[in-house]
Each structure stands twice: as C-alpha cells, then as structure tokens.
Length: 178
Image (cartoon, rainbow, N blue to C red; front, side):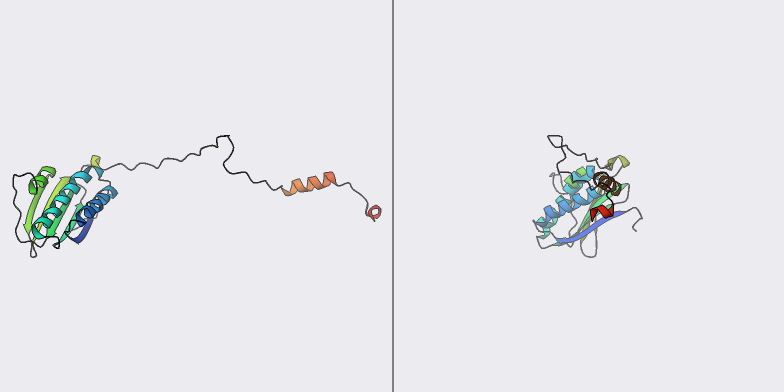
C-alpha cells in the first residue's frame, strides 16, 4: 500500500561493478531531492553494501531491484535479487553486520524469485534539510563608478521638440519668405 505522502524510487539493474557507483549517486540525488541529506552517507553505504553482495555472491550479470521509500517517519532501502540463499549475519564486520550497524532495523525475506534484503532508518522532522530562500543578487558597480554598458541617448519627448523648434525658428510671415 502506498500512502499519499510516500516518496518512492525503484530501479532494476544488473549488479555489475560499474553500476554500483552509478546507483549510489542516483540514490543520493533522490535523498537530497527529498531533503533527507543527513541520511545520504548511511543509506548510500547500505545500498552499496547490498549491491556489492549481489555482485559477489551471484555475479555481475545478476538482475536485482533497488528500492528506496520514505513514508514520512521511516526511510527504507531494499535490494531484491534472484539468488536463492538467504544471507546470514556474520560477525566479520562487512555484509549484514554493516547493514545492522547503520540501520534502526533490517531483515531478509524469501520471494518466489529469490530474496529481498532491506533496512530502515527513522526520519525525524529535524532530519529534513530546510528549504532556504534564494539569495538576492546584487549588482556590482564598474570600477570607475560608471555603468558597465553605455547608456543609450534618450529620445526627446514631443513637447521638448515643439519647444525647441518654436524657440529657434523665428516667426516669419509667408509673404516675406517668398
């Protein structure tokens, strides 16, 4: 069920070594777009770990799906793949140990086609990066105090033209002019 406030991104890919950094950047961009900047390092690290595990255990041609979803209070990242064995938590420090360390909760579940490994983090209102108003641009004067572009001459107004012609042209009777 998708709630009205849910934000969600899903991508299907092959777990090749080249795709892992690309997906990391895409996930980071979505989190920033959702104004969840504080979660970028840990979520991207977790997604990278899960994709690396798919690559390591199933091979570079293994198809998988990455999904990130924010419901307002929880941010969930999941990687689904077609591999049959469910992963185990080992104390070696990598893999699911790293996922457990950076998340509030995590889990795995089997599917018809393979499995899903997921982790969540709580999202507080204070986690969202505030939207700031754009800064006003100010003009920088020329070093000599003059405008950078020359001012175009102003065209005289009609009443100025009339006054100029009246003042400079003497009134002569038509008969004298002929």
